[in-house]
Amino acid sequence: MIKVLYFARLREQLGTAGEEIAPAAELETVGDVAAKLRERGGTWLEILGEGESVMVAVNQEIARLETRVGDGDEVAFFPPVTGG
Image 1: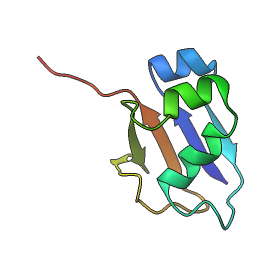
Image 2 (image 1 turned 90 degrees about the horizontal axis):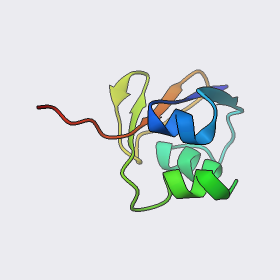
Image 3 (image 1 turned 45 degrees about the horizontal axis):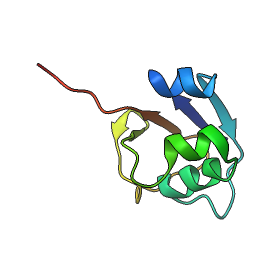
Image 4 (image 1 turned 90 degrees about the vertical axis):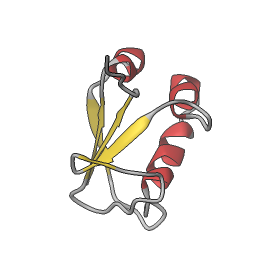
């Protein structure tokens, strides 16, 4: 299973802190996982849509859409953070 986590405003907007997605041949990268979630439409499409400001980590390391994922990985989506 691929564990997907949502943090901060994403968790609030989606109404869930996380879920598990069965690994599949078409889910090779973070971008593939995001695309699969966007297929749900509605809030999923709004939050994870192209051009939206969302960061991602795989196994607690900052990642890019091209980062590969597989069974047992943790993918976390979160809004960008700013320092001050």
